[in-house]
Image (cartoon, rainbow, N blue to C red; front, side, top):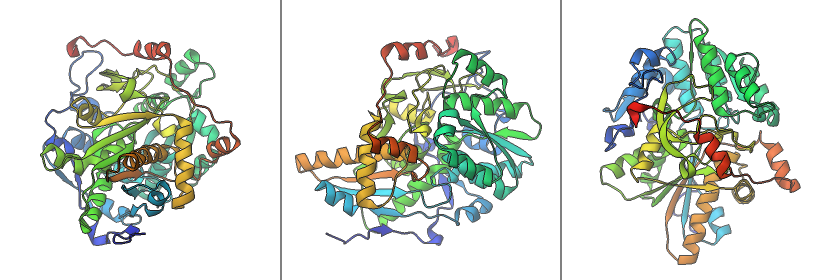
Length: 459
């Protein structure tokens, strides 16, 4: 086995990025602005500040600055778990017998078990700096809720987490980690909000979705004083915070003179994928590389590969501003697959614009193939991956096997966003042979598309 490159490439604490990377500074076309659903006109800043922390709104609207400084208080928090390692997947390469070189950026080496802590720390800090008493949020698989519970405890904030009901039931110990850090965890949809009650009436017995949970969290925040809603994916400022992943990966590769040909990441709302590709994509937009970017989504919730590019609500109760994104419709209710963090009806406006402009491609994969890849990876690389992360593993393995067939060598980087040690119900179903695949029918897609609002000013 050629070991000219270490199995794990570590950066020193001094090499921790001091600024986030804003890919919008180099985009040829900016994504369209948020719209007020009542007027069809761009949302004023004041409307966004009623929902989000003020400094996050600053970052959301910043289209010009390539680098945005990371406050020292956030850097201090990051130092507990960053920089994270870049790993050369020698054992996976050997198992696949491929000429490809495979690298992965591992974000699971913190208590939350995922990349989500990168933005949770930032948003909790900005909420505390603004003088807020608490925040609300949603969580799918529970990784974002866990990360935000940690950050809220660190910065002294109250936290309510609306957890997608099917994940709440599949992953009871995720809930207990959040409660250990002081969070109040509510299965969504619930009867504690008007939005939840409407969704339960329309979809009796539903396992919920991220769109449902977002609606309940936004409503709760707006009905409380000294409280704001914080989001774990989709929005521009979240992708900005996650750019530390790509910046560290790029710096580690440069230490050994490695230029990758392909960057792969799983996609639900787009945060980890957007953060991983940010500095590489920025250079592509400036004509400095020809990297291929591949986003991987579940076949059960295929917003890019089967969705429509349209203005839509970010939540199922139609309370949020409208965002231009690839969407299955805010009324789309995904099947209860185990990749809870990817069960979102829409996609990040930044990722959507880059996809529309042809700078990246997307693939959708079935659940059983994802777990085939997850188990193969665990057996040779020694890490049990989260189901979400395994989507990227699956696509990376497909690409490496294609290299084997053609004899062409590629250098592939993928994001290993987190660990799957709270996902044992899913692994049990896989091991028992009871796991099933699910893809929406055309009729189900059309029902979801029917919920996309008509916005005359955007037509």
